[in-house]
Length: 462
Image 1 (cartoon, rainbow, N blue to C red):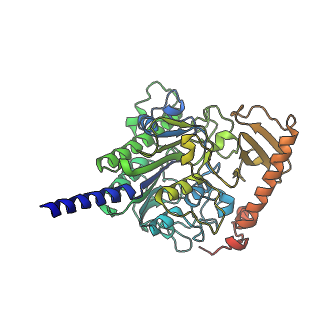
Image 2: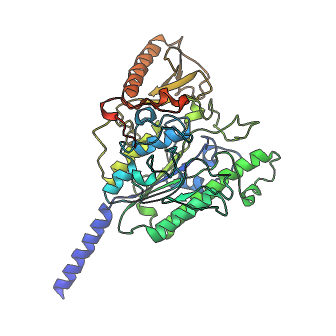
Image 3: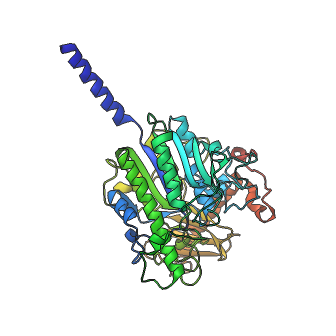
């Protein structure tokens, strides 16, 4: 009896070691046009988001979390590549019929993780090509997703009964129900029925909510009986609809006993639409200046929540500045996968920030939005200092976000030495980025028929 007992003990210890060293599952839940102040946990006085509020308490809240752009497609490209959007080519939102797309010469996160043995799935908005579900440009599967259910851009005709989803290359047809619950149901079905349980997984869930045109389940609208403005009620209900779908996914992870071994990120692709008062788009920036399409804080600072049981202490709050491209590096490091060294990676590992240490990054945080409503379309942050500039880098504004997160006090005249320092750094970084990426941005208004530039970024058509 002695040998079998020893053998059983050895096998048990080996199994425990294997479980302990297995890389984590990774989930990336991305909202669309969700403002920095749109969650209860972010201070919104009306919108009900019980599931995300609870999730924040289970992990960490990142109070200075940024999207990599003030519009949708570039932010998504940075999450998947770790690279600033002007560097990876997806520099602005992608309408149909343009050349702009996420090229396969970029090393996307699902591709890199699949090479490390991960099962991969994407559900929801894609918006990283203009020739959607056509062989002329890469589709989600070409970037490493084993299973995908997606739309090119928005759910159409709205979040209610969308008819433009494609699953693994085949049109789905009209869907009964609402977008966020529908894509989460697809994610849960994949988790239960289609993934290989022997493999860790990457699951991207990118909702359309609360991007306009908004449509919300009457059950969620009924939660706001005191709102007389139906546009406001529809928006707030839409955020609650998103929150409900998120909660459904978290419960599924719990039911499948996957919570403890899954690193989950939640964030948004940019700030809220509209003026927040009269026009469609009633999202909140939490008092920050600017909104979607603006490189002021309200257009780029977004909710950021992350949970990894056993690795991130519940109730953590971090004030360290982090950005969407950090998700790429953080996910690879968590998975034990190497970060690419054959190209510039702008993101850093954000996990140290959750223990009070700075994120190590080789380059400053950088944003550029050609369709910004203000003359200032470029921004860069180093420490608490942020500089904004026009397209020609000839006009500047300077702010200290540590003292003035609402960007009310412009400091270029009071701080000439700091302005000169930040201007020189911005010009250097901007020139480096433009030299590497394809120049689609130069010809975007004529159809985007630019060409690749730079040794490392010579574009393939795909």
